[in-house]
Image (tube, rainbow, N blue to C red; front, top):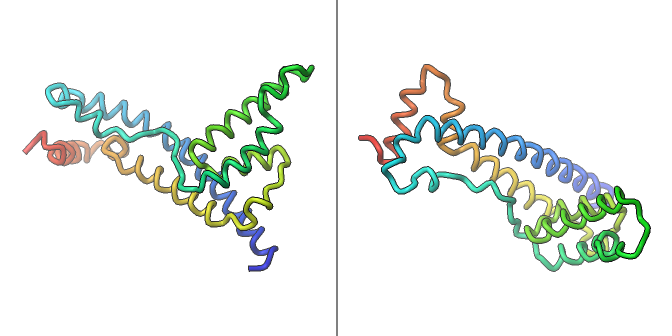
Length: 187
């Protein structure tokens, strides 16, 4: 693949990752509201069972990607050189700039823990850090990010809570019966 086409593909994938992060953020907020509604409407059925509702919860923690930690760490080290709080210990950097650098450092550290290539690269871009020497063609990593984010969104949207919150009023009783039957709480 020629360099120009590769750059366009990477740009497109980065934008897709950014869009999916925003969609996931929105989905998590809607899911939390849906879960509250579900627990309110189904709570009576779970009082006697061993926390079935807890077993049905979907983890809303960050996604851990399957990117090699070695590659993510190389870029993180470059980010840390520009943002590590100890670097600014004896400087007169304005407080606002210091807070921004520390936030970027913490975000990058979290991204490394989750092996989140796309977020680490996003932070590196923000700091004007070049990373071509680490991975010239990172489309596989970006595609992994797209898949991980898409899967998490689908997982949240395939819960009983989401289904319940998005069921119209005329079908609620029927859906309630189906949910209770699938949980073994009604025959």
